[in-house]
Amino acid sequence: MIFGILACSSSSEDEPTDPTATQYDITSILSKFNGTGLTVATNGNTVTFTTQNLPDHKSPYWPTNNALYEAYNGTNASFNLNPNRISAQNISISVPLNPSEAGTKQATSLGPIGISVNGVVFYNQYAGPNNRALTNEINSFDQFLGHPQNSGQYHYHVEPTYLTGQLGNDAFLGLLADGFPVYGPVENGKTITNSDLDVYHGHISATVDFPNGIYHYHVTPNEDPYINGNGFYGTPGNITQ
Image 1 (cartoon, rainbow, N blue to C red):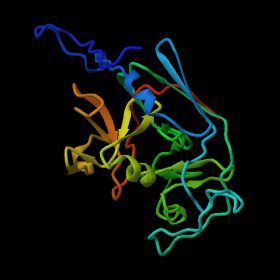
Image 2 (image 1 turned 45 degrees about the vertical axis):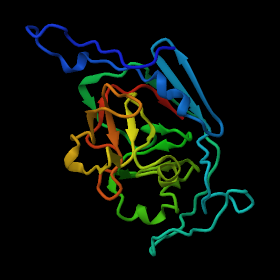
Image 3 (image 1 turned 60 degrees about the vertical axis):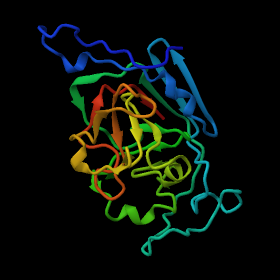
Image 4 (image 1 turned 90 degrees about the vertical axis):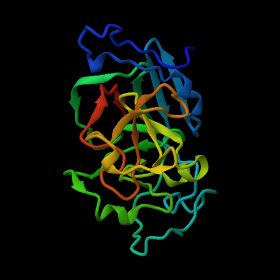
């Protein structure tokens, strides 16, 4: 395995710089993925995550006979338990090991757009079926700000507070399907806001995992679009479920 970053941009100041030519290597962070029913397999320039999508934390959305069942004890006075319950899935997300900026950006779709380090998928900033704002759906988020949809597929639309609580507010939280990392709401001691990020909800800077810099997304807890903005910065791989 290769660790670090592969920079493939032009070495001559006289040649035009193509921003899509810069590639990174995300191999070094794959060991951070560790979830129930999660496997990680590399094949050439692709890494494939296959997950049962089972959160490793408590929730009122577990069946009551599950050891991880816990009644809602969060801070949202308007919490409303939705009728769905967490169930095992079979989701496969393939991402490039050497992500780079896409020449043509693609919008995210409803459903999984990436995967967190505990094997739970990320969703975008919209509620189904018609890309509605999350205004009402937020009230069904459990104490760790996730919930299941009608097939029992648990997911995070916003900051996964169980992970930031366990790993830190500046921690690596997972990957979107284009291979670019998702980090917590803090960077170098500063809370990140939308004004610090581009329209895709990311930027290029150094991180603990990538000291030479990498494009990455940030979660913003109190600002829409929360995880991702106007689409993928890179080219997404395949998502099947």
